[in-house]
Amino acid sequence: MSNQTPDHEFDRTPQGQALAALLRRNAPPPSNAAAGAAGVLLRLQQQTRQGKRFSLLHWLAPAAGIAAAAVIVVLAALPDDTRVPAPTPVGITPVSAPRVVRGPVQPGLRAVVRGTSGNGWRLDAGLKDGLRVGDTLHGKGGIAATVVAAGIFDSRVRIDSAETRRGDEFFIDSLNARQDRAARLAELGGDPGAFLDFGAIFDPLPMREAKLRGLNDGRAIGVQEVIPSILREFAGQPQPTLAAQLGLRAGDVLESVNGMQVRNLNDLATALGYSRSGQITMTVLRGSAAVELRTN
Image (cartoon, rainbow, N blue to C red; front, top):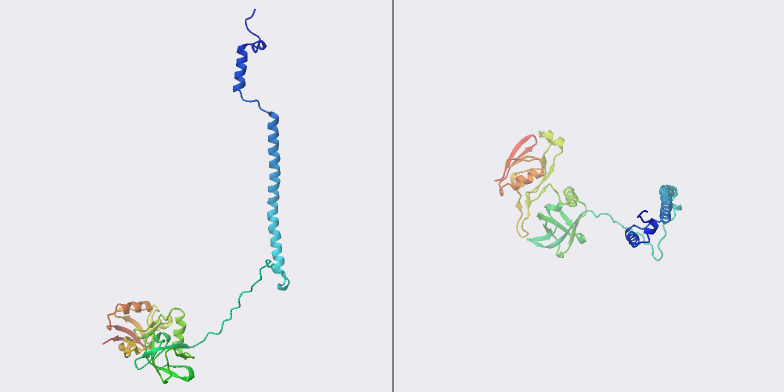
């Protein structure tokens, strides 16, 4: 007779019931095949719907671009009077841009009497504006103001009228060449060739002319004008400029200043800056001859 207990009888024993309880507490729950299959099917259906939407957007974007381009081409082809204006938002009155009316630029030179100067009147225009001794300005009633001494920024004028007052305006309606040059270059910040304190106006020479003068590199500056005197103090007398003391002349071409080669306006400014007050030596080409100039 066998001592082994059948399985169905073991399950009824205290040991079998304890083992079954232990397995129920620690074994994983049985899988639900039906629920898993339903979940997989649901995910597949969602992906299919999303794929359809993405496919539709993929084709709609190019189609929208083509339609917009067609509308632009059609509108561009329409005459101006058949185009439909953009609608104005409700409650907002369209405002057209202000029309700017520009009057003609007034030519000429304007100067104002600022007070007395020595035995004359002081005008707020001078060498930088192209004024020189002997120039005449006109005021109201045909009153004339004649320049008798010119500073860089101001001038002393003689006015033959007992009615002149501070604040009176005087004009030159038709500018001469030097006044026109000063006016044009003032808009660009000033005349770079106007060495007014030195007493001369310089300009770079055209390359062809410089080479004809024997300057092979084609760089040189020439003297356009020499200013004989300058008014440095309003109550004082005009003084000779350094250019006049040197004997510089219009038409001279600079070669060197105090031993420094001069080929452009920067070179000239540097050379004059290194010069001691009143001590200047220049070598210029006057015609075809080289001439040395020196202050006393």
